[in-house]
Image (cartoon, rainbow, N blue to C red; front, side):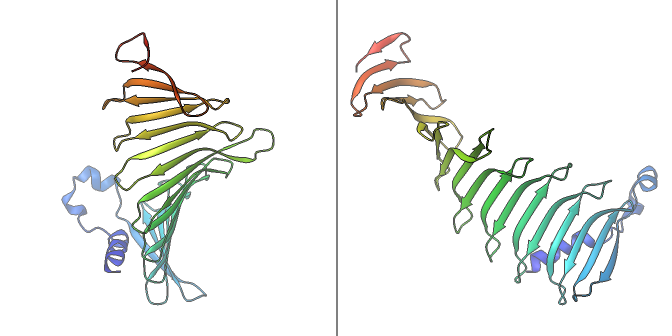
Length: 241
């Protein structure tokens, strides 16, 4: 709570150090100023202006606790971010818009202020990706979506499974929803191993070195039995170990 109020105080408190700036800077940049008004519902709205342009609105409850913060683009009264706070002063929802007023991201937090879900959006308002987080705010899974051009039905084309150690797996699907590729990555985003699946049930599995360069690929039939190997470190060699 103290940290939240401290941050708000820094945001809304005018600066008193203009005298230490060069004369040219003082003549161009004006000190921020704040207006305050009471609302019919008992809340208070504090508006912060930079160079006489609205940059932020802070809505406080009757006890002076933050309920909502709205941030605006400099020079234009265009809402770029809104943060909604819970009863304990922790943020529970954050929304971000671009300069064209399209919602591009949204975050949801639990009562302790820990991030639990994040969504990104296309300009038509449809979800592009959605990430779920555990109780510690660590990502667990991300769903990536595409939309059919004819009927705009939502289709998941990729799933990212996150692990606590920072490694992750990406699972990609075909337009028909069939499994297409599964790839494991290390914490630096370098490929470790991958598997490509064919329509007939066969697949190819590839291992990579620490730089992400393929070492060898093993082809398997529809029963999962190996049928051939390509050793990439010995270019052109094809056969069995």
